[in-house]
Structures are given as structure tokens and as C-alpha cells.
Amino acid sequence: MDHAITAKPKTSLLLIFLVVLTWLLSVPVPTPALANGLAGTPPMGWNSWNQVRCHDLTEDVVRRAADALADTGLRDAGYEYVVVDDCWQAATRAADGSLQPDPKRFPHGIADLADYVHSRGLLFGIYAVPGSRTCAMANDAYPASGIGSLGHERQDAETFDRWGVDYLKYDWCYADTVDGLDRKAAFEKMRDELAALPRPIVYAISEYGVSSPWTWARPVANLWRTTDDLFATWDSVLATIDRQAAVAVHSGSPGGWNDPDMLQVGNGTLTADESRAHFSVWAVLNAPLFAGTDPAKLSGTDLATLGNAEAITVDQDFAGSQGRRLAAGPGYQVWGKPLSDGGFAVVLLNTGSTTATVSAVIPGAWNVRDLWAHRDVGTAVSASLRPHAAALLKLTPR
Ligand code: GLA
Image (tube, rainbow, N blue to C red; front, side, top):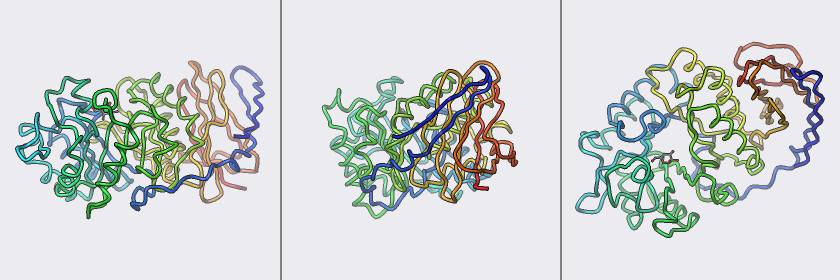
């Protein structure tokens, strides 16, 4: 990348960056994306994992999430996939070798649950693994055996098709160390089984960025995790943001997306400012947006964060490059990306522990809109920010 950036701090609280956008000319030509015609924009929805993790997952949790997405307006804001993560499975496969749900926590079965989700105007997703063990079997002492898809790929794909699954999260877990599998080959195997089905199924793969999937996964999957699990703490959010900087140049394009992991807005120790900062960066990254908290119990502030239509528009707008980190130093980061209407989206992020003004000079003459305040704020790309707060700005040519 040919970033030319000069930083001229006037005081410790005022940082000015000059960003020359020659990097826009350095977008690599991407290999063709997976030709399944899905995930034209970064997929959005809700996933059970960050809300209930493993043992508390039930069909009622999923039904309530679907209801709340519809009732809160989040569905209409774009959150369309309701994804059941790990721990939906019974302890063993059925006699015919097919996967089956835990009968106590999913007494009505998965097809019934998918029907319900569909009846609420939403789409349905599920979790599986290419090896023999799911992650929760290793990490959460989930008492099961043989529920991985290894050796059952076609059967599982057909089961998902029959159940009405619209989205598959296929998670590596320990398939190299436990089963001796190769990542690319194993993910391609399920890709091919899904491609043979009548039903269109978004294919989300997850191997935590270990084998740099951004370099090989575009023809394989619709989205690929770039990093390890995101936790609901500011340290985890910031560490994850830092790790996106190196992969952003390999950004996907319609049909193939870098995935920095599901949202933790509303969870753990994240403050409202930290949640907005997290969401702001995910938006300029064109990240898949999966809420991971109980949508029925969101505070008004967190609902406004997840439901911010102007921020979601930035996330869903891919104009040739996902957001890149334009500048970073002690206490600040600046991220930005072009928008398809000729504008530019900028995140000014205060990573320090005191209130600070973070400013950027982006070549060109711009009108600036603050997408959290929902108002036009003049022509300066600048904001006074509390610790761990971010401004998400839309720049429109003057
Ligand atoms: C891994 C994934 C998580 C979740 C769990 C389930 O840790 O990265 O997102 O799916 O497995 O066990």
C-alpha cells in the first residue's frame, strides 16, 4: 500500500493526520468469488453463541430471538439470518447416521424451528464442523461424540437442505490436530456438497485466520473468519481491530467477506461508547453483522447502536475496498473507506484513557455528517471523543 500519512500532533489532545489516498489505487484484483450468488452484501443476523454460549441454548431462546428481531425493527434494518450455533446437537447421531437435535432442548426439532423462523420473515442458519469434534466438545465439555461432519458431509448437507437451512457456519475447531484434515480441502468438500443442493445456503467458514483464508477462501466460502473469537471486553475488541489492519488489503467483494467475528454489542463489560466504537469499525470493514445478545432485552442505547440505519448503510456499501487503517498512534486510530456514491466513510477512534480530539485531513473538500449524532457537522473531519469512543463520519464531496 502506498499510504502517505503525516501526523502533526498540535497538543497531546489534538492529532492531525494528512492521508493521501493513493492506496485506493492499490486494490488487488480478487480471485473470483464463490459462484453461489449469495451474500452480495455482508450478511446480517443474530447468532446464539455470544448470547447463551453452549449449555443454555434452547429452541425457545431461538424463537424469542426471532420474535424480538421482528418486533424491535432489527429484522427490517437488515438482520435476517437467525443462526443456531454449537450445542444444538444430540449426544450422538441417529441410527441412520444423520444428525439430530438434542431432544430436551429442541423438542420440536430443527425443521419446526426453521419453519418458525421463516414464518417471522427471517432466514435460518445452523452450525457444523468438518472434523469429528465440535469446539464445544473440547471447550465447553459438551457431552457428545461423532457429531462432526467428517465422513458425513453429503448426508449432513442433505439434512440441512431438508430442514430448511439457509446459512451454514462451518467451524474448524481441531480438525487438523484431531483428524489430520487440511483446511482448504475440508472446506471445499462441504462447499461442493452445498453446491449440489437445490437450496441456496450461505457458506460461512471459520478457522480463526490461522492459514490466512483471505488469500484462498474467496472461491470457497461467502465469508471467512479473520481472527480468533471476539470477547465482550474492550481489550478483545481493540486487539481484534488491530489484527484487521493487515488483512484489509485482501478485502472481499460481493459474495466473499472478511469476518472479524460476531458482534458483542450489549454484552460483557462493553460500555455504550465501546459498543459504538466496535460497531463503527465493523461498519467500515464491511463486516458481517451478527448480533450476539438477547434482542428482547437490549437497552435503548444498544438497540440504537445495532439499529443505526446510517451505520448499516456504510457496512452494506462496498465500493471496491473494505475499510483500511489510515493512521494509528498512541491513543488514536483512523479508519476509512470509499463509498459508492463518491463519498468516504471515516472512523475516528480514541483508544486512549482520556478525552481527546481526533482529526483527519482527507484530501478533497467535504461536507461531514456524524452518523451517531445523525446530523451534519460542517466540513472538518474531527471529533472530541471520550475514552474508547469513536466517531463514524460520512464525507460527501462539496
Ligand atoms: C468456536 C467459534 C465460535 C463458536 C464456538 C462454538 O470457538 O469461533 O464462534 O462457534 O466455536 O463451540
